[in-house]
Every structure is written in C-alpha cells, then in structure tokens.
Length: 191
Image (cartoon, rainbow, N blue to C red):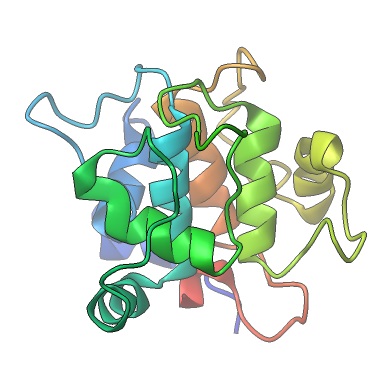
C-alpha cells in the first residue's frame, strides 16, 4: 500500500509548520545527519553530500559495509573524497551508481544542482538515463511529472536550480519517499 504522509508525520511527531520540517523528516528515517552545528539546512548542498544521501535513500548501508570488508583494496580513484566517505563512494562507484567529473575527481566539494540530485533520486527509483527513461538535464521535469512536487501542499519552492541548499535537497528527498518505483513494486520509503 502507498505510504501516507499523514501517518509518517504522526509517527515521527513532526510539525508541518516547522521551517525545518523536511530536514527533520529525513533525520527521522536516518537519511540526513547533522553536524555539531545542526542540520545546516541553509548550507549549500555539495556533490559528496548528495551522493551520501543517495546511498541512504537506496538503503544500501549494510551492502556498503559488506563491500568494504570483502573488497578492502578497492579504490574508486576519486582523489577528492575524504577518508570518512570512501567506503560509500567506493561502493557507489563500483556499482556504477555515481560517476566522477574526470581527472580522478568526483567533484566532492562542488555545488550540486537540482538536475544532479533529482537524477540520483530517479535512479534510486529504478529509472535510468542509459535505458532512456529520462535525459539528465530534464530530471527535475520528470520528477515533477512523477509527483515529487505535486503532492506537496507546503508551497515550498526551490530558489536556485543550479545550487541547491540542504533544505532544497530535503524537500526533494522527502517527497520522493512517497513515490512508487519504476516497476511499481515498492515506494522509495520501503528502501
């Protein structure tokens, strides 16, 4: 059955009028973690952060740990990934779930755009550019067509599609949890 936002909100005791609602919702399901400064929702979303959120949306934490144990020498080759994120990035790279920008760089500290993040979320839902399900640059449009934004009644809007904030990412990721995958077999929330 389709997950209901009302049930989710009640379960995690969320306040929809809270300006940090989306971030707190993702924190409730262990998709978004803060720092010693909190959730930092007004900070710019970096490509590395987006990739880590993507891994959590995929629900592959156990697979990442197992991969790191069975492939301790595997290296994505990304020279700009910090040590604390290497296990996740090695796994995502090995599975061909993320791609770098060339010259052994992932672009870890580059800003992430709406197209980049929505493309990751669409991939988490089973859609693929390789299968011609969507064109990368049109990923936000496809997300909209799938109902990422339509079902949200908050009135939230993304200010810059070239430089997402962590708040923007939280808005997109939260709404994606209630979207059915390409095969119509589960919702992203199920992962």
